[in-house]
Length: 493
Image 1 (cartoon, one colour):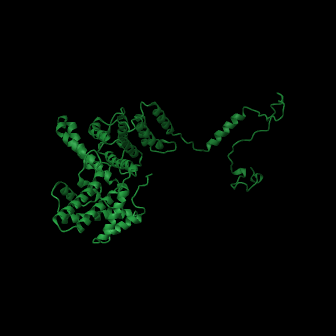
Image 2 (cartoon, rainbow, N blue to C red):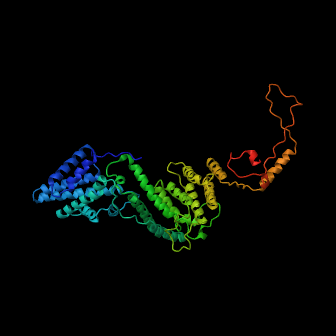
Image 3 (cartoon, helix red, strand yellow):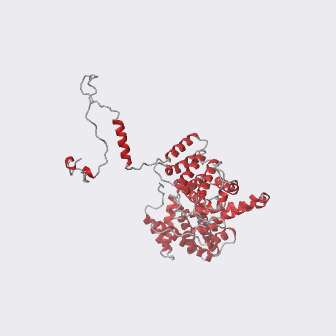
């Protein structure tokens, strides 16, 4: 559960009042002065969210521009104030989203945030080139306030309002195609590896940049962006975004044509060791190892997505929607696809150590995820049960305590045939009864007295036993009726 976040205002009405002072009338300097004073008072008490701090800086520059004399010195001061406010606003929005092993351009992050591109260009010009003109800076200030209104004030004041739309995340499949093509070239001809090394490294950097973009696209709502300081949940939010991005990447890797060869012939491997082919390992191991180095949670996410794919219903899934290859005769899931994914899961748990530095953690998580599918009473297809069983045995090989757990799960999957009741079973029961009665065993009544019965009187003959189960026919006068309607004499039984 996310902890409450501290805000400067006592109630939301105070923020709404500031919003009306700023945007009700653009020419009302008195209202803007009130808004500036209120924001300055808040800033003296606590840290302001970046959106409000940017609003305060732009308002101060606007008041300085509106109240200063028409001199060259005053114009230069106004230009510097506007430029500083815009530079700090753009940097403050972009820098927190500059995540990942490789840096991304400010323009790409700003595009995901919905910032006007010309504001980014203006920020660059004001930082590294000549100071823009006063008219251009005034227009930039108005554009910035408009963006803050639609992306901060409106969502904060109207929490039920829909979040601002952002550009969709670009697909990662083309990047994986490029990586696969380059790796095929260097694996077929090792002499080309040195010449293609820079290209392969560039594709890996592009994949890391895609992960960073996915983190930004994870959730751009105000609550997730964290407009204000929220130290308690910042790390948790970052982990959730990273996991979401890695799940999308893992799903793309699991498609046919990626880590699973498109041709079924290329999936044919010996039963032992239960691992992918050497060709697949040569293609994808460099990328997977690089992802594990840059993202600590990647091993657990990768194995979890593999198991989820194995457990899902193939009739409802759309595996193979994005094929990383040229041609495909069939996009339907088959047993070889599941088995090959299981081999990759085995490779993962044998190769990687989880973030807790316990080499059994990945294996334990694997068992916990698969165990419900193998529990007694589950009716999974035989092929799926076989694949999951082989995966568990291969992943836990060498760990005695885990092997015992897997053996217990496997024993629960052994199906016991259910006996169907048949008419001749009554005849068999009657034969058994006659066999027992042929021994002429006489049962003694339990003695209730204080003394032991004599040996002579202890085996008194009893009344004849009941005939046992009997199949009634039409001559037995039996009739179907609710219990208690007829007396036994009336029924003739």
